[in-house]
Image (cartoon, rainbow, N blue to C red):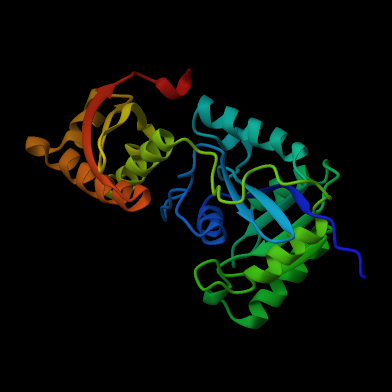
Length: 290
């Protein structure tokens, strides 16, 4: 009888500059929304794990914040996040470097220069190829491969599902033989209250502009089942300045009501239960500089 292949399992970081579609790809691969999405750059602030288990392998995906040169980071918090993300690349089994369908930017080169320092398989995934001509994608692949010795290079579209099975197959190829790290029914190790806070923050990105969403921090103080089908969530949105608080509250509370309504619907869809969402807005001056 042929020998059964050993089970493979490992950690895979999704990295790239802001707004290349890392969170969209993670949600698509996991099959559930575990990372917030916004067309605006640098939405992801936390490092989020998504778990995908197959018959022969388990992939623990790590979605990271968009990387830019450290000196371009707008705040001390952003600089610390970038530094910690770069350090974290050394502790995984495979790195998926995501780039979009445009010419490489200074951020792309910054990330590739750092990837040269780690001895891990690096897969290039050119995203959003559904919005580019085939010849353009082929030219991009050649440009990237001339700069960095990628283990594999794959054009993908997370929204259309293009070549995602190929990407997963290549990732599994590079994983070590190892028992699964998590149970097969787990899709994320993210706590429910943290995910609820992230979904609230997503709606702030959707509804507010300029620096307001980047200055917002959501603290979920209470996440409690009140009955069999009702969950009570109490959260405070902190901003850095009183003027930002006025924008978030809105005239006669109109903005915070919109944020609450959209966030509640999103949370109910995610957790499949009715939610009572109690939102407040506070001020913590210059919290990103701490």
